[in-house]
Amino acid sequence: MPEADPYEKTRTRLSKAIADAVAELDDAVQGRGSSDEAAYQHASWLTETFREATITTGQMRAALVLRVQQAGELSLARLGEKLGISKARADDIIRAAQGRRKERRRPV
Image (tube, rainbow, N blue to C red; front, side, top):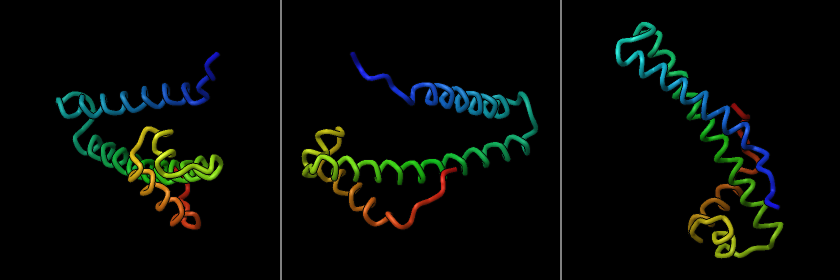
C-alpha cells in the first residue's frame, strides 16, 4: 500500500490560495475590482512573500537533501538518482546546505 502524502492537504489549500490571489490581481489588471494602488500593494506583498518563501523553503530543502545523503551514506551520483536530479545539482545543493547550517532563515 502506498504511503499517504502528509502534505497533500497543505498543497491543495496553498494552491487554491495562490490561484485566488492571482485571480484577484488579474481582475484588477482587467479593470475590475479594487483600485490600481490597492492592487499594486497586494501584488508587491505577494511578490515579497513568495520571494521569502522561496528562499526559506530552498534552504530547508537543501538541509533535507543533506540529511538524506548522510542517512543513506549516498554518493552524489546515487543521491542525484534517488532525488531525480543530476550529480552536479546534488553537489550544488549539498554545498549550499553545508554552508548554511548556521545561517538559517526564519520561516515566512
